[in-house]
Length: 188
Image (tube, rainbow, N blue to C red):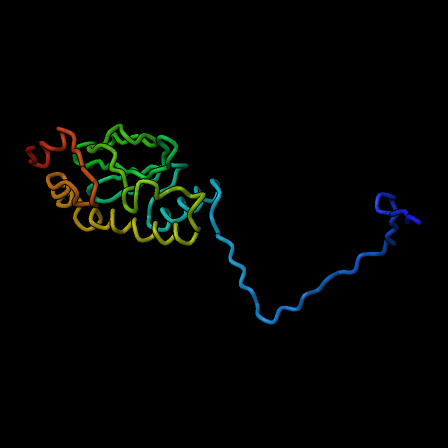
């Protein structure tokens, strides 16, 4: 006698449905949770404005003004080729009395825009990838480095940076306009 195999015969399977039971796993060692505290665009602008104001700049949107006894400095947070940068110009008050125009980083100034973004590297201001505290600390370190010499002796510092490229920072080249060159006695 030949036995029939039941291999090809489907067998109905019934699984009882029950209420799920929550699974709790006790942790014996706490696991630290680290979340990078990067910034969004709005917070990036807010922090920039706050740190510039703390240093003594008057804040007007993306422009920052520092009015010293011998010079007026206009700094700007701008974007070029998809990358944000910080730059500034200066005006010698003895030359441009009353000619400085708010919200214009070129009119009435005696230098081409000096790019401060090279302070760290070309992509230093990619706020999406930078922790907030790092940016705040970098700005608080950078502003005195760039602007304290103007506060101490603006005309002497301008003469120094105009004739020696890279004095401000490794890659900075300062170009002074002709009227300021004549006033300062600088010959290129």
